[in-house]
Image (tube, rainbow, N blue to C red; front, side):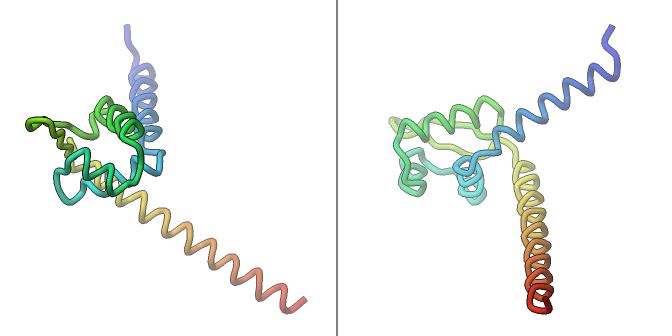
Length: 118
């Protein structure tokens, strides 16, 4: 019998996998680029300035985790975000990052003031 703890553990594992997928700077760039519109693989490659093989690897991971979807039109593959909610997560993490940076800057300022007094 599956307990609530087992279910919570499984959900936490899946949550960690999504976070791990997004813990790559290039993948975060891809998510941010796809914020605006669907875009071709070639255009993504041009914007990111990475080899086709690298882009392909990143897109495979993002597709496997359900973050992006692809569609083919002739020889061109287009990508878009599978779930717009992913942008909420992206934006919240960005806000947290800015808050952390602000706090670090405040600490640095205080440390410099203290050093001048010494």
